Length: 66
Image 1 (cartoon, rainbow, N blue to C red):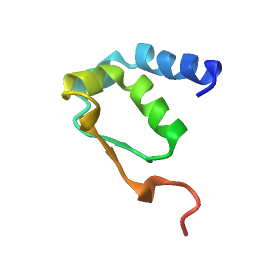
Image 2 (cartoon, helix red, strand yellow):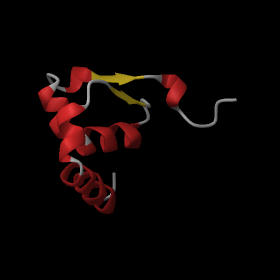
Image 3 (cartoon, rainbow, N blue to C red):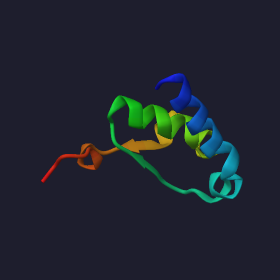
Image 4 (spheres, rainbow, N blue to C red):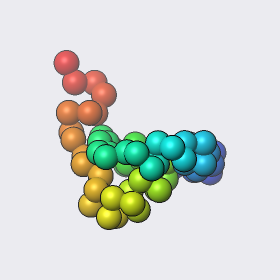
């Protein structure tokens, strides 16, 4: 992510404390920037759910598939 992208993802984390507390499943595309955004934006939920292994990456979530 760019510096701006990191700031935006961190803002997502700060603006969604209730979501960080109730999230039960985190899905992400395995694309690098999407995964970086997911990890930064949902850090509280990821920590609460046991770490990065809590993020499920699905190739089907990548854009451009028919």
